[in-house]
Amino acid sequence: MSSQTEDTKQIDGQTQPLNDAGSGQRPHRRWLSLAIALIVVAGLLILGIMSRVRARAALKAETAQVALTAVSVVSPKQTAPAEEIILPGNVQPFITSPVYARTNGYLKKWYFDIGAHVKQGQLLAVIETPEVDQQLQQARSNLLTAQANLDLAAITKSRYQGLLKSNAVSQQDVDNAVGTYNANKAIVEADQAAVEQYTALVSFEKIYAPFDGVITARNTDIGDLINSGSNASVKTDLFHISQPGTLRVYVNVPEEYSRGIKVGMTADLVLAEFPGRTFQGKLVRTADAINMTTRTLLIEIDVANPTSILLTGSFAEVHLKVTAQPSTFIIPVNTLLFRSEGLRVGVVKDGKVVLTAVTPGHDFGNQIEIVSGLKPDDQVIINPPDSIVTGQPVQIVQATLPGDIK
Image 1: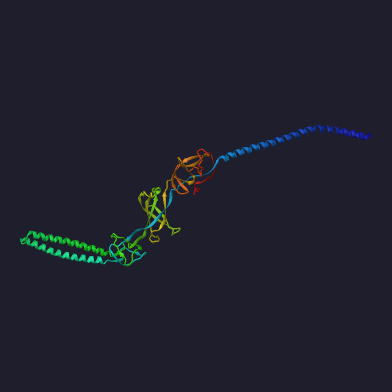
Image 2: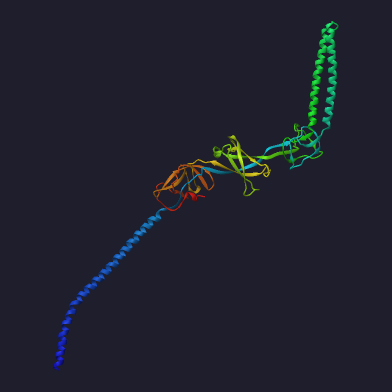
């Protein structure tokens, strides 16, 4: 009993100091836990506040960014030193001529049809003209009569002049004889001219080729009534002949390109019947004047055609390389602004819009030439809104290089 009591006391004696130490550490632990909890709460509050501040700042920046007008820009494209233009042209023979009759009659025979190659002086047709033949015969008879009268008048004149020396005839008789001789001489000359006239008309019975060429039309046949080309009635050419060895191509060049047209420059011809093939010609002459009706300059391009592969009357696309002004630029047409004060484009400088006045040149459809008002490093706005003004902040979302302009 006494031993249990001692153990208990001992235990109590040992336990008592332990209980005292634990009671001293518990407040310290509570304050440490509380401090840690406060720090954690403060950290959470700080993190929450900072995240909200960041979100608000990001929202404000995003709102300001969205408030800017988004634009796409393009840089002006420098024009090439030589600009190619394509114009329509009509292919014509170097020489072409309708062949008319110079006398009236009926066609007796023709010798060449369309497509025939003829030489200069070759007989094409013969016209039968019996009236002209009779008129020639009559003129020759009149000439013989006049010549006989002239011979008689010459004899009479000589005789009277001899008799006058012996005073066998009067001076009046001599003068009458001389006058008669002169009159008959004039009649002979007139009749001679008539004979030559009808001879020429008879020679017109035969139609000859005026030059080397190809018969492109035959508008007559055997037995047709032929009216001379000098006749007042309706005239029809018997044949049409062309010389296709060299072809002429006439082109009407718009006035704005006329400064770049020079005699001696080359041109390429493209024809639908020869896909993928070009024919080269040379500009030989211009009209040196602008047509007031069409506002175009007429030019002639000669093309060699030794094998007659090109047909006269064809339609051709003529490609000309015209010298362009080096200070001009090309921009898309959807960059233009039509304002009451004139043509403008929007140029972005330091993030703001500057409306710039420009002077247009040639219109190429989806592109246009700008003669003045732009610089190579300008950023021109594509599809600018009508409400855009100078000084308006904008955001560039897409930039196109000069080489990307199509």
